[in-house]
Amino acid sequence: MDKWLATEQGILLCAEYSRAEVVAVMRTHLARIRRKLENGGGELPELGSREYTALLRADLLERRRGSLRRVINATGIVIHTNLGRAPLAAEAIEAMQEAASGYSNLEYDLTAVSRGSRNRHAEELLCALTGAEAALVVNNCAAAVLLGLRVIAGGGEVVVSRGELIEIGGSFRMPDVIAESGATMIEVGTTNRTTLHDYAAAVTANTRALLASHPSNYRIVGFVAQATLKELEALARERGLVLIQDLGSGSLVRLEGSALAAEPAVAESVASGVDLVTFSGDKLLGGPQAGIVVGRADLVARLKRHPMARAVRIDKLSLAALTATLRLYLPPNDPKQKIPVLKMATADRTALGRRAARFVKRLAALDNLQARIVDDVGYAGGGSLPMSELPTRAIRLEVRGMSAAELAARLRAATPPIIARISKDYVTLDLRTVLPNETAELAAAIRHALS
Ligand SMILES: *Cc1c(COP(=O)(O)O)cnc(C)c1O
Image (cartoon, rainbow, N blue to C red):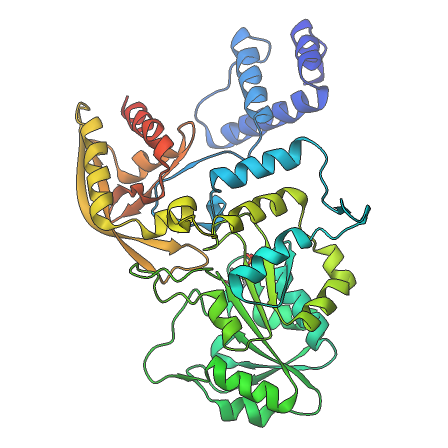
């Protein structure tokens, strides 16, 4: 390697890129050669050959492109955590761009000419949309839950139902989050049944809070019981406790008439008397990654003052995107038209079927390809709402002489990569999650995959 780096080609390439990058890529080549020596098989071009320099240059370029890329989500899973959750509305992207390109009054009060709080930009909107007295925005919902528990119940006890000890993907486990907050978890009830009496019997002089969690990614069915928010609110009032609810996806509107009609809206929790409600910015709200706490003004004020709030504060770009997204919930806007995740999640089967038929027509000229429109289901969320099935009309692709796994791999190798679903041994595309301006790229990727 040293010898090659000292050649004219090596010196040129180290000037074009950096020596560190060239060495890093060459190391991956050496590892490939070693693997091949061990297992037999193909060869890399000879070091020093023109072919080798071309390969090195191509790999260096690829490395420079970075690993975080746009992909086309053809899975039909709207809030796909692995694919970056919510795509933003045009208004939110514009607000982000404006905040990014210059200075802003992020923490500067233009009328008082003094330090302002970054939180105030979102707080009024959140209060208007949820009916809460106060709101705080942090980095994500996990941080909101941790901060809330730490401030309200740290050093004391928090009572939680055994049926609601949730785990959200990515190592968010409620018992661990409670332990990290410094509160002691008091589990009550059983997996399938927890009554108000179970909570009441567990309250001691050290109890600070009752914690309810929305089981967004599982259901307990059959012989079940769970104390209602109203009952918990009454108990919290009577015993001087704080009622906290982790809603997770936290829709700001009821999605009547859609498969998500049962998802509770944040305002309903606030109206039920929950003292602090936590939810995500990038799930059903349809905004950027953020964690939101809404609720009683005195409690939110305590959260704002805690040093941990500073450590988990939201950045200006997310804040700009969040406030712009929240404004799309105000009249005369129709959030179901303006906010991409709501538009996708509420798109109806018939309309998706028509769009699929138009798309299949574009593919008609391809030999070897059979594209059929079939009844299928998508989901509101991958890690977050896998229980909410969305009936859909999907496109089932079959290529003569090519396995579904091979076709899916070729689509993933496209630019931009296409992420499809394999169901019943077929590659299936659900246009629900394909943005209108991505349709042409999707068709081109399929054409290319077959060539
Ligand atoms: C998704 C979710 C979280 C975590 O939210 P992030 O914004 O990903 O940190 C917490 N609680 C519930 C109930 C959730 O669904």
